[in-house]
Image 1 (cartoon, protein in one colour):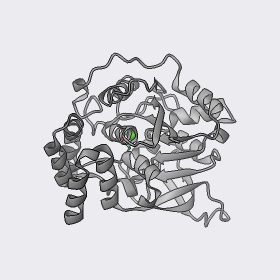
Image 2: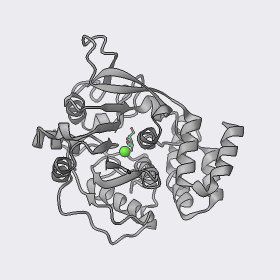
Image 3: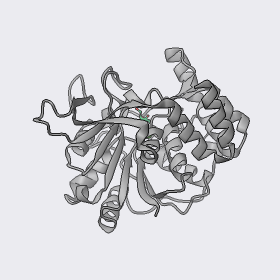
Image 4: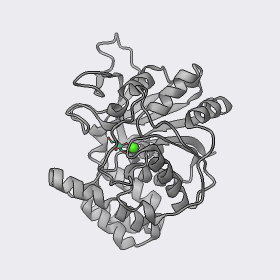
Length: 324
Ligand code: BDR
Ligand code: CA
């Protein structure tokens, strides 16, 4: 039986890649996409979610438009690393007539969770606002979700501040409420493991050579990430952060995860910082999450590429074996 998932996202190049991976895996059933402001304002992230479905011929999957404002009722500063349109300047390549559903994402989440209690995994790959609002709206929501996988947080370095990762920083209160809510199982897949899986230039070049509609699209939308990484850090890579949540769902052996008590700083100079207490050492051994500590990059690459491009499986495996 297929495993049901809901992806709460802010597409976003790396969100797009995460969705593509999920849509291309035979054992995953994407039940819905929910949008939130992050890599762009809500109208852009919602439109991009619809475009990704169109690209994959999956306009049967509903998209629910979510929150534009964080819990503090401010519109978070959006990310410009993925271009003005969130898809590296290539959002215009895909046109769709599919419209978002009338129901708000938060209402959908609450309703869906009641109707499918214990049956689905929730991916949070944008700011946590929609999920925090669902928790506030329905105290039972927390009990209906089988598992939560979050791309957010970090340990050691940030990308929105010296200590904070963007998704947690954009709505720190929401991130804290999600972590403190008491979900059955939560895994924080943060920058410390998503930074190393950035798409390397040679693998990106492989996508150009494959020359399918999908590989060409990925090649194009990741260009802006490479340009930014080159200018800021002298690296020839494109960010892929969110993809790791779906890859981990497919193959949990890709990550080493450690039980931890995780809090998010909600104000002050460290706002958005995830404070990771491994094994709950400072919380009498109480843990509220799992912390992803290390990642197997070569095996991630193989899983991502062979799932999205099964027709090139042999070439991909051979290349990774000889070069990574
Ligand atoms: C996270 O922030 C967003 O820009 C990305 O899509 C990812 O979810 C990385 O910090
Ligand atoms: Ca995202």
